[in-house]
Image (tube, rainbow, N blue to C red; front, top):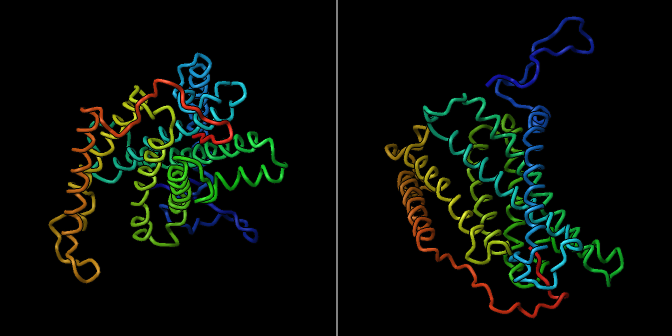
Length: 329
């Protein structure tokens, strides 16, 4: 990969340019942040569109959020909550995109893709940065809504309650959020270091970075799990939940394809020389991973085909939810 910055460096004590001593494949975060601006702009537009859609659904009374929490039937008052939802959906969409790009890069590039590997790598980096920003914005707007909501507290108490309920694992103690919010926090707290480790891989070593980067798929799984548990717009058997499940099929299939045909020769099943923890041969662990991925693909197909995924049934009558026992997404 060519360096993102100029290969020349004017030293303070030299009148002639000197060669940049950085590794040729080192990518500077600052350059990627600039390159991510168009991607971030597109994410803002998508977030605005989702916000408008959610606002209109709440105004019309069609929102599943109102079916879950009737006291929130006021889009003008709860606009920060709706914006948090919009950022969350955009973050999930961008996470899907960057995971798909990462899986394409993890194996032999399909011949039908008209762009080079370098372009795919740049897209993967910029969409990753945008995803992290959207995830943080999702959490920040959720915290802002909690601060606005707790009118009975002093400002100091409100700020602490909003921060703790949003960012401190285990602090939020209402309903489904006791499980769903820690899942979202785990996704956020893993995404940021795992995403930024790319820019210091020349210090920690490429092999170490590669092993750690594989856990990015855990971030995506936690994000989807968080949405299924706590996204009020997907609680019931409506089209948003179906779309969410359908989007997981290409991820699972591409993951299985990459496990069956990895780019690195050492990761293929035909290399049984190395052992894991001095006991199991490495090929056994790799085969187990492939079998697990295959089972996930089959399970997703069954879920989408049957429509039975554990989602809630829409209540015939609105639940008697107290405004002070709410559990916003």
